[in-house]
Amino acid sequence: MDLLQAHDVEFGNVEEIISDTIPAMRRLQEEGKTRYAGISGYPLKVLMRIAQRIPVDTILSYCRYDLLIDDMDTVLTPFAERLGIGLINAAPLHMGMLTERGAPGWHPAPSEVRLAVKEAFAFCQKENVDLSELGLRFCFDYPRVASTLVGMSTAEEVRRNVHAFSTPADPELINKVKAILKPAANVVWPSGRLENHD
Image (cartoon, rainbow, N blue to C red):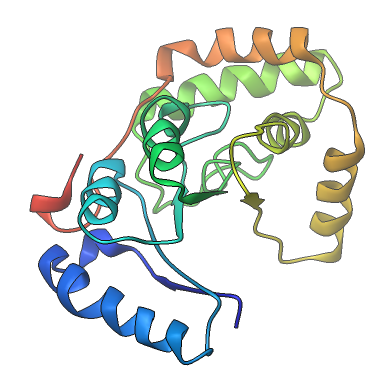
């Protein structure tokens, strides 16, 4: 296996992750059963707290760098670069928020985010632009991560994502969409155990 990650660390006991989980992952790495060991989660502060105390090879965070938010770039990326940790950006469409279908009912984003995205979709329709493709292209162009993970469940989604990857970005259009989304920019929600919230 190439990468073994402790997933959604904010739902666990941070001290146990530091003293037990990551050392066990490192033993598997030493045995040649995985090449890299990392952590994943949503709250940036808990990811950084863990990585500050025990070395990890990678950090995956989701919904922290896309058209709606950029705190991966301003908070997590400088930290990871200082420590030589590889970054993975996940959920570039904000867990479905930036798709035509829209976010699932369980999505934790507050109403101001949903309203701003609705306005951005209306603008993109007038411009004959696919907001999802624009959002993916925006994330694909972010040079400070090792990879951007995109969920896909149908052949059509694969086709659209490949099209987004191969379509050049339109910086002017991205700036207009980000201006529409600005009232809901950098909104985060609590995730995991109370003591692990940002």
